[in-house]
Length: 404
Image (cartoon, rainbow, N blue to C red; front, side, top):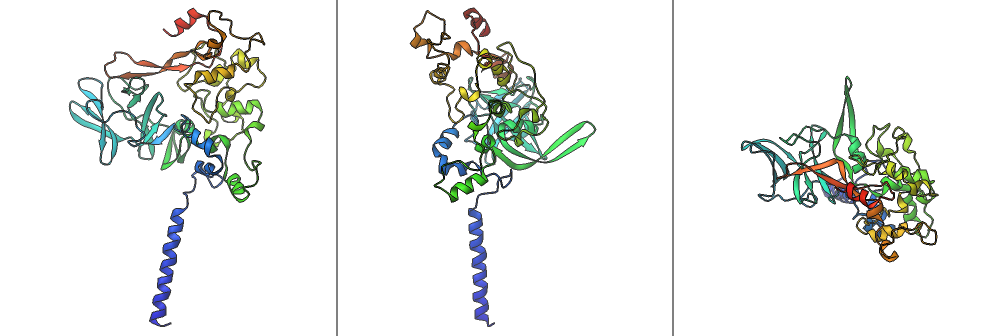
C-alpha cells in the first residue's frame, strides 16, 4: 500500500470513528433501572396531552436537581439568612459554582454544603439534600412556602444547625423513581447505604406507576396502527385492592420495608413490600409526617359502604386539581344525590351552593402533629396544614375546634 492510499484509509477510519461518536452521543442515556425501562419522554409521541398535564403535578415534581430554577426562596440579603441566635446563622449563598447553605458561628464560617437535590414540589415546602462520601444528607434549612420564608427543617434543633442527618433510600422510594444504591455496609447492628452519585430518576415518572414500558414503546413505534395497548399493565384491568395498593405504597405512612419500594409494579401486593398494617385511624387528625391517607380513607364510611371506591374515584393522577374543590365535589355527587336520599342535610344553603364544596366540611384541612416549621422571628413552629382523608360528617362546632 502506497502512502497516498494509507493516508486515505486513515482518513476514512477517523471519519467513521468521529461520526459514530456523534451518532452515539445523540442516543438517550440508558435508564439506570435497566433496559426494560424506556423513560418518560418516550411517552410523549403517543400520550402528549396526558404527559404535558402530568409534568405539572406535585408527583412528577417531588424531586429535582438543585439549581436556581428548582430551589424556591431568596438568595439575596437580608432574606437569605436563617437566624438561630445571635451566635448561629445559616446563609443561603448563590456562588459561581452553585447554591450553598453555609453555617456561621460568631461570624466565622463553620460548614458549607451545596443544594444537590431538592425534595418536594414546592407547593407547601421544600427541603434539600447534599452529597458527601457516597451518602446523602439533609440540609438544616428548608423553605416554607405559606410563610415565604426559610425555615428550620422539621425535627432539627432550633438552637443551632446540624448537617449530619443521613437520608436513606426509603426516602427516595417515594420522592423519586429510582436512586442507585451500590452497596450496603454493615457493622454490628448498623447498616450504611452507599449511593452512586447522580444515579437518580427524579420525581414520580410515568413508569413508576405504569410499570416498565420499553417493550410497549418498541412495539407501538413499529406498529403505529395498533390501538390496543400492548406489553403494558392496563390499570383499569386491575382489581380494586391492587389499585389502592398502587397509591398506598407511598401514601400509607412511614414503615419498615420488606423490600425497596422502587420494585413495586402495578398489580403487585402492598403486603409484599410492607408488613401488613391492621390499624385504622378513627380521628381526623391522626395523620403522620408522611401521610397515612390510605388508612384514613379506608376507615371512612364512604369507602366501607362503596362497591369499588379507590383513590382515582376522586383524584385524576394526571392533572393538578387540588385547588379546584368544585371539580372534586362533583365527584362526590356521583354517589351523593338528592334522589338517592344521601345528599347533604345542611338546609341553610341552596343545593347549588352545597355542591360547589363538599371538601372543606367533610375532609377538613387540619394542623399537622408532626410537620411544623420554625421561621425567622417565630417563638414556636407553624404546623403545616394537611387535608384529612377520614371522610365523615363533622358537626360545625367540631370543625371549629379542629381548626383552632
